[in-house]
Image (cartoon, rainbow, N blue to C red; front, side):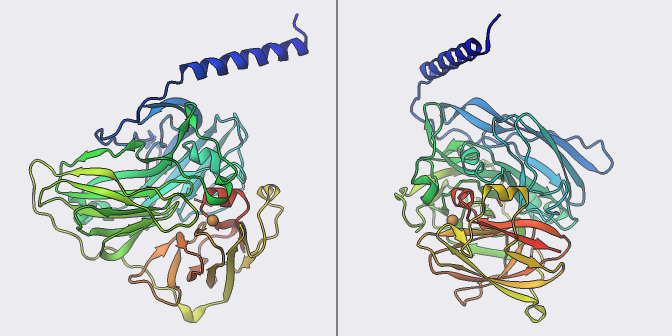
Length: 467
Ligand code: C2O
Ligand code: CU
């Protein structure tokens, strides 16, 4: 017979012994770089059901090696970063979430235009440790592009995200099969930074909660500077910035342009040549790279002007080797039609002020996850609104709205060089963006916030209710 006190003592001793052992086994080595690029393992889906597909996504800690370094990380589907999920437009996508973490968690389907209520992209739902939750997403016929999944529990987002909880979600559509894009070799690339300390994701320090946490290793699919040896002459890189706070500015070292075809899960109307691509946290972009002339290129990371951080030096993050047998490529011109926001039918203009880790002078609080909060904005279902989002802070803040993409009407009074429907937009100190939002299709309560994960966790988040 063991009494409770004795049992607790035994447990404590055991925990101490285990911790000691884990530490003794932790022998960090020099990080490994330049290995062949790995394809992210895909989540197995059951497509035998008539309505779509179903799968299971488990969040759990696991001992792994990242760039040769042993690390206990948090995983979606037993891998870092999380498993690649391929859903299809027009189907119902059912995903059972198994929370095997020791914290409450949930899934946010960042950017997917589904309901913010019920068991769709409902971030008010929180699943306790050990429990499951069944999500069901009726994916629209017109949806096409790259999205991602991450936890969205207030106060429990930044740490688990840094430790690995991020999974790319591709929604496939006819355009992927019926356009010039079929000739392209597709790679989904998760950009994520990480520092490993004591064989685990480095803990947050007080300043991380202000500046946003950045990791020392710049990882592409969990690898340092991997080598992509292409098999085809045209590459389609589908990039998601799943970092907590790092801004990734990318360019080719050859000086050639990147052919931008999509942003934030929306195709552009036509291909645009850009010299640099800036991906803020949670941002996605798709670029084509023409390798038909041979030669090795590198995708280079450049420090962005984000304030308050030690600048990470310029460095290659991906090496691109041309295929052995090259072919001429045809680049697509026209891609999609983006309906323009109708400014003559606007029901409301709303100022949104980002400052001092708050939105419109209010901070989101833990207890608000229980839905008790008064929304900052109440919107009429179906309304068209213009939100004037102003960064009155000394730091950069990427602004994100759930459920509804916005048409970027202007930034600092200037219309963007090409039409873009975004779900996340980076705002520098002093920037003012006018965003046209059509609150169509769905009703319910959801959130808008800064996507520096630490800022959101600190309360830089607000609620919009559409009814
Ligand atoms: Cu990707 Cu509310 O977040
Ligand atoms: Cu912020």
